[in-house]
Image 1 (tube, rainbow over the protein chains, first blue to last red):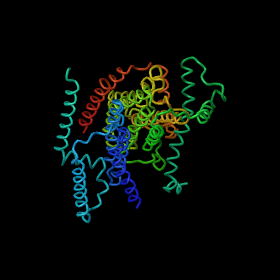
Image 2: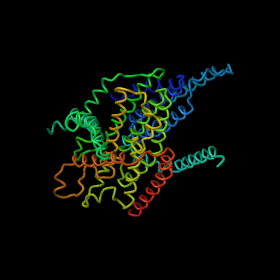
Image 3: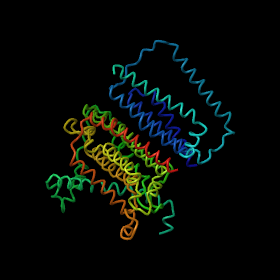
Image 4: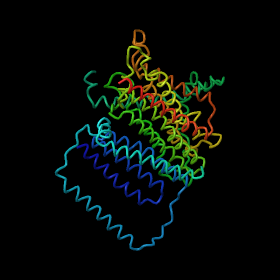
Length: 164
Length: 341
C-alpha cells in the first residue's frame, strides 16, 4: 500500500518534470527538472528492490553527469534562447504523430502482458546479484561497453587537443 | 527499556534524532573550537568576551544571524536562489544515515542498507548542486566563478576519494559500513585497522582520502570556491541572514560527516585501539567521538598551517598525482587479496 502511494507520487513527479525538461525556457531550470526526474526514477528503482541501480542512478546521472551539464550551461552563460525559426511547417504534426504511435506501442506492450508479470525476487537488485550476472552471463556485453566508453574518451581527447 | 528499543516506531525516530541532533548541536561548538584553536595557533586570544572563555559567542552569532536583515539582490533567479541553501543542507544531513557510531545495531546506523557507502557517496555528490545553483542564481560574477570552481573541484576529487573507498570495499567484501567496521576487529587492536592493512598500501589509501576530504568539504588549503582575496566570498557572497547560516551550517556538518566516514573506513569506527582492559572499559561511541575529534582538530590544524593552493596546482594534484596513485594502490591491494586466496 505504502509502495503504491509512493509509486503514484513518483510517477507524477516523473511525468511533470519530463514535460518540464522540454517545456521550460530557461536551460538551467530545464536541467534541474532532469535532475529531479533522475531522482524520482531512483526511487522507482528502490521500489523494485534494485538498490544498487538506484544508488548508481543518483551517483552517476544526478551526481556527475548533470553537474557537468550545469557546469557547461553556466560556463557558456546560456540565457533563454529566442524562438527558433520553424523552417519546416510539416515537422510538428509528424512529431505529434510519431509520439502518439510510440505511446500506443508502449501501452499496448504493457497492457498485453500485464497478467504475466511476476514480482521480482527481493535480492535481484543487490550488489552481489548484479555483480554475479555482470561478470558471468553478461561479461561480453559488459566488456564491450567498457571498450566503447574508452573509444569515446580517446575521441574526446583527440577532438579537444588537436594541436597537441 | 528493552521493549521500547525493539519497537520500530520508537527506535527509528530516536536514531534520526540522535544523529541530526548531535550534528546540529555540534556545529556551534565546532565554530567556537575552531576560532579558539586558530587563535591559539596564531598567538591571539580569540573570542573571549561573551560568557566564560567566549563560550557563548556562537549563541550571540546565531542570534545576530537570525535577526539580521535578509538582503535579496535585484534580478536574482528567486526560486533557485531560495532553493540553493536547502539543496546544500539537506543532502549533507542525509549522508550520515548509514554511518554506525556504536556496536548496538538497534540504535545505529539509521539504516544499515545493503548499499551503505554508495548511499553516502550519492548524498555527498548531490551537495555540489546547492553550491553551483547558489553561484548561478545570485547573478554575480564572483558567485558564479565560486560555484564553477566548487563543481570542478568536487568532481575531480570525488574520483580519487572513490578509488580509496573502493580499496576498503575490496578489503571488506561488502558495501555496508557496519561490515567495514567489523572487518577491522581483531586481536591486534589498531594493527587490524584498514590504515595499517598491507602496510603501506592502507596508509596510502588513507592519505588519499585525507587530501580528498579536505577538497570535498571546500576547506583550506582547497577553499578556492570562497577564496576571499579573489572572489569576495565565492558562491555565498549574495546570501545574508539565515540563508548564509544554512551554508555555514552545511559546511561544518559535512566536516563532521566526512570525519566520521574517515573514522569508520580506516580507523576502526567504534573499536578501541587496543583490545584489552583499560581500553575496552571506555564504551564504543566514546571511542568514535574521540577519533572524530582528532580529525576535526586535523581540519583546523591544516587551515592554520597551509596556504591556499593555486587553481592549476589544485587540478594538477587531483588528476596527475592523487588519481594515478589511487589507481596503482587499488591495483596492488587487489593483487595481494588475489594472492592470499
